Image (tube, rainbow, N blue to C red):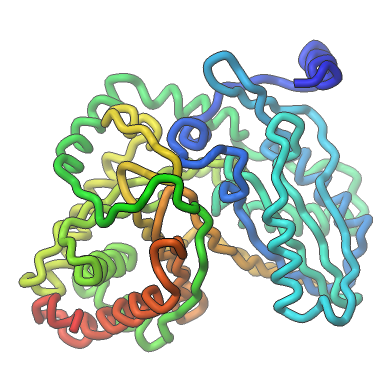
Length: 446
């Protein structure tokens, strides 16, 4: 740290401009269990917000300022410590907001995508902050794109919906002429972190840990790859049509299962056939926002749960779904901080390698707002960028009556053609399962 930065930091702390807080369990996961450095852009969460209306640059800047006053995550950076970093939350902060008028050539979807990728890839200074970047592209007087890149240490997928709601609320607040700050969040992120630490006593960690020791004992890897393999993931977008989506939801309902458990059961069976391995462990995110007071809070609250499935191809589709649903319910009931689970199992990451799972499976069902008010509308479009702890990912999002399926994969391990074939097999298996739920699941995979 430079002499100037040290002096500035000392001034902030002595004046009360900055306060120090311990890392949350979720933040510790990034520093202690991630297979890539926390500074790597693969830890950035990204989205594009489509904004229609005659918005002004000044009003947008003011709205973002108000959101920063409400959400301490936008004023958070990290101070290196002797043992581990600590959060440093400043009382004020200047919005990280940029503006760009696009030429006619840059307004094309491919050009916007390329510009957005440039925003996503820019690194953050974890000490100096801020740890987010919003850039507005103006396509026309009433058509804009806000590209948001935010570091995972202060955000999760849920955070993006909160950001859009707060930004639109603050914008409306401003154009109505109010000079008052928008109401504070019911629970700040650091207060939520303190409550989490109080909840997870050593006894509680040990109780849940015993469940996971038994559940994950004897697990095996799906494949091996050399250490140091690129952690950058390629992306292929597919989708299940409305008719198939409706049929899968009906299949879940008839078997007393969730849509997630139903999609997971067929995914594990498809992956088992694809890899030749019947013992499948995947990692899935959980929102971890059961406390109503934290649902308006921007921050990294989500957790990771390993889900293990022993695929029996002679079992019927409906029995497989019920079995997976029961196992998933049990796993979520014993969810514990992932960083503590890794330590309890005596596991530690190596570069580009996660010892608990290689595959991520997620049903993205956190709030994704489409806001429409007089003279202004905003639509959030999530960008699945994956995380550096996996080799393969399948992320499913409900969009109207259909399902968007995003595949993330290391191109050093899989070709695009292989992933497209996996997608074809998965959707064919979903169709087969819906047609003949009483048949053996191996028949649905044919």
